[in-house]
Each structure stands twice: as structure tokens, then as C-alpha cells.
Length: 323
Ligand SMILES: [Mn+2]
Image (cartoon, rainbow, N blue to C red; front, side, top):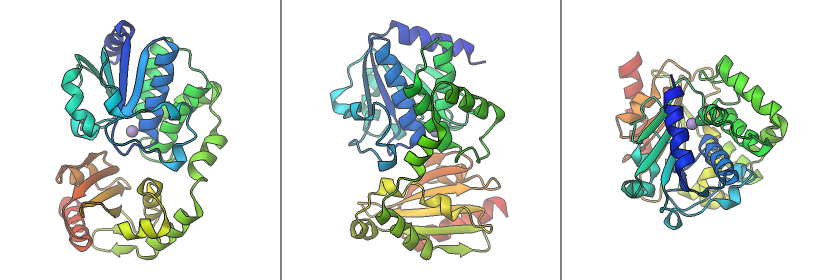
């Protein structure tokens, strides 16, 4: 099914002298892993390549060890190329400030696994059964007979291990595990990657996590477990918002939780909500009601509400849709 579009993408890549690679804003492990794996491959293939995304570049602490991460540059310095490849981006808005630059590219390859992808590319490699964009990139690189070295293998493994919640979420398939096993054969070291990502938060972040868990609330009628992070919490603890990315995973461990949510106060006073479902509730659909996006079990949106209003809205939407 993907063979035809892989052929088109391979021809576009082979025919390009220069390539810009971009991902969604506030990138996660899958976005960064797929970005840097493609960057490494294209540079080895002799292309002029730029890796970026559409906001000021800040690498979350748990990803600072990724091979090639120091070569990511600000998007202003890299918009002039034969080809743009967007990775792990469901739509144009997720490109952040890169969205305004889309029209300057004649050729755009859109590689993604989000079910609501808007097919904004001139070539769209979409596989909704893939656990991670990194799983699709692995297939594309194999198709192109790329030399997948241990750096590329580690980067792709990172995207898969993070997007599957360490191979525990519903998107984990036998194929996901086979791809992961191939990547281990190619040089990815699971224990090293685990320690770098999951045993790498600062003590200050750990204390902030305790605070966030301490004020968690459970709404019985909807099975919602939520908490919140204020700007003041971050500044007092000296922790960046990127370092709180995994906090929500602790909330969803409650037996009572059908949906876990964390509301994060943003600089403009709005709230960014991260949502996780255990499968019954489609949080992607709820997020899209507020112009957000995501998957059935992991999604996010920006809300112009107070925390109390947001919790009530979310709980009401869960009840209306599922109970
Ligand atoms: Mn992803």
C-alpha cells in the first residue's frame, strides 16, 4: 500500500540537492528521533540538509543526548531548499512559524501517523497503524536501502519507545516490536536509551512532580484525573515546561482514571491541556473541539478558560460522549 508513495518520496529525495526537515512545535521523542534520523541519513547521502522546527529551539533535557542534536538550527536560517520534509505533524498549524514558509517549497513530503492528518504535503506518507513516525521512517529508509547505523537506530528506537509508552500503549503491535528488535540488531541499546530518557529528570523536577500529584483531583462521574502546573511553580522550582512532559503518565496510572489531564498555564494566561485516555474515551476528538489535535489516547489543546472551567468542560465532554 505504501510502496507507491515510498517510490515517489524516494525519487523526490534522490532528486533534491538540498532538504529542510521540520517537526511539530514542542517536539517529543518521536518528532526529534525522526527529525535527526532523517538528518543523519540525508547528510550521509551528501545532501545539504537543515533540521529545524517553527519556534525558538529548546531541547528538552531528556533528549539532549540524541546523536546530531547540536546541529538543529533556527528555522529563519533554513528555508531555502529543493524539498521540505515534515515529520510527525498532523497539520500545517502544528508546524508553528514554519507554516508561513510552506508556500516557498515546491515539494513537501509529509510523513506522519496521526489519524487526523490533513495531507498538506505534495507527497503524503501516512500510516495510521504505525506506532510512531519513527516506525514509518524505518520502513522508508529500508525501502531506500539506506545504511542504518547505530546512531540512526538509536534515534528511531527513541521515537518508538516514547510514543508507545515503552511498548505498553494500544498502538504497540507485533510489527512495532519487530521493528524495535531490528533496531536493537542495528545497534540501539535499550537500557542506555531508557536511562537517558526516563532516569534523567532533575531532582527539582521530581519535587515539582510530587507537588503536582499532591494536588491532583478525581472526578468520579467522568473518570477524569487531573492536575495543573502554574508558571509560578516552574519559576520557583527552576524547571522548564519541557521537563514536565512525562508528569501526565503518573496521573493515568490511577485505576480510577479513564482520562488523565494536566493543565499548564502559558505565558499569555491561556491553558495548554495534555490529555491521555486508557482507550474508552477518544481524547483526540475532544481536543479537536477546541482546535487541538492528537490521537484517540493522547491529545492536546489550548483553552481560553480558568483551570476550574477547563476541568468542568472536559469532564462534561467525557460524560456527554461516553457515559
Ligand atoms: Mn508521533
